Length: 371
Ligand code: IPM
Ligand code: MG
Image (cartoon, rainbow, N blue to C red; front, side):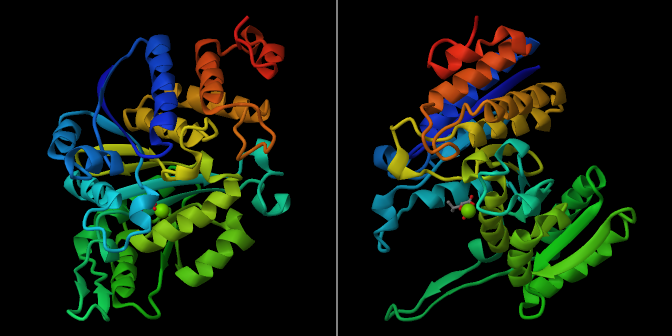
């Protein structure tokens, strides 16, 4: 298969982790005889520095003319600490989501058996947990009208949803549930919010078309508690933009590190694949960032094009790296493995999937992983 892939490394650790994801995709292309053509453009704070815009037209044009986008991260403390900044890197991410129509954000979360001891949650609570969050990504309070009064003392953000916005992501979530354990939980705040009541009404109507899927409802405050108390009860979670943002960070605790969580943002025409962790500025350039979330995002990219064998191989390589503790310091606090060493191991495994070709002794003394 020939794929044109736009690479937007962005800010902070974005470039480091994206480099590893690209390396892994190149290994896949080589192994499976695909052609992946990468083209890079600017996004986020680096784009503001060079062009004045967080998502320049040139970057949009590249995205509109590629098959998929591999995204790193955006965000820079110099903007976080300046509430009066007129342009912010995050606007670039939101503009990209809106301009490319990426209304479905898919965030899979699972407890890796190799990392059960690493989560702050008890092993017996998380063992076997495996859920996917479907977060609406181009509507709700993120994109509703924003107001600030003239005296600067009153502000508001409108949370507005239209029926069609709920319908299209609900169909995607129900289909995903049909291919999983056939359970869908709508997370909302229908006891208080009118927009949440619309979600319930629309999702209940759509559920009739998916009779094999069991539909449940949970208020978001209760869901926040249940995700930690009993994560195994969840299969597919469907929710709005803001609630999905919050509960997906929370759910990442189950996996043992936010550095493992990948995501896909998909619309009718375009798709962007990105780690959920953000730019982690404190770690920039230190080689300590975990590349796995970016690498698993690349695996989701392949799945999007039905390259399931290829994606399974990446997942296997990632699991092997966790099993052998070839991990960055977010997972093993005294780890000697840098971002690129973890990427090297995963790439080597893809090229030599038979364990026998990997010299485990050499890996742990920091030499070549291949005999
Ligand atoms: C995410 C991030 C973004 C969001 C920020 C960086 C705007 O937290 O992708 O979860 O809130 O959607
Ligand atoms: Mg977030």
